[in-house]
Image (cartoon, rainbow, N blue to C red):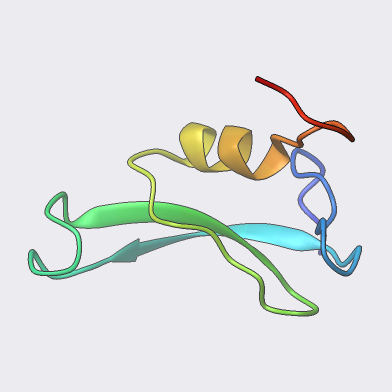
Length: 68
């Protein structure tokens, strides 16, 4: 089911979810992580320390054209 807090995938328009995981210190020094991913094309983002930060990063979109 699509998480209503998340925008659809910018690549395919698919529904997205957040997941919580745990990584070893060699991969992610903070242990527990959150990330958003597309359930259709499997696009995913880097690890974040909180679900709120993962959602905010996923929902960020750049406007058309150059921005500085």
